[in-house]
Image (cartoon, rainbow, N blue to C red; front, side, top):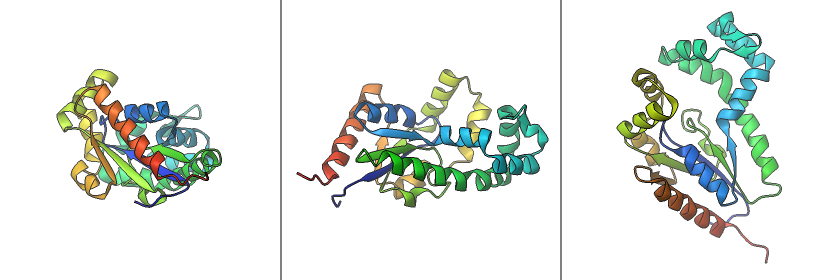
Length: 206
């Protein structure tokens, strides 16, 4: 791997993989993290062109009092692969643009920035980053996590999981792959290792 002055990192993983926790550990090591999910949510509430397109495609019921009706949209979007493609084509281009603006802003004062997103490969965002990190875990473990932590039903989990590229395929394209099937401390140590590697790749001016 070549030394570099600045690093843009993507952290991805299927639903329930533990990528958010991994990013929390990166933050503890001084790495700024952009939540792509948060960026998407803000755009869904504020971008007028996006709102209009979604209402046209999925119905006026998609928004209530100017706010996206998440339950209605989830029911519509995850009902078919075609609908997933439709909403992604509306959301992803603007999200990518916004994430790049935020990342460049952070890199003015920092050497490394990370972006956390479940759909790095699905949104074809990987080429915007220097490295992609994949957090993996067996499907049963991931399902148990979502059911216990966020009260997902098995059906809700499966619908979202089916619309994500399988880990085996993503692992072939990722630069780093970390399994998260142990303790939180195990995952913390893996985040520490990654942070050390990345910091070692930064060219110093000294």
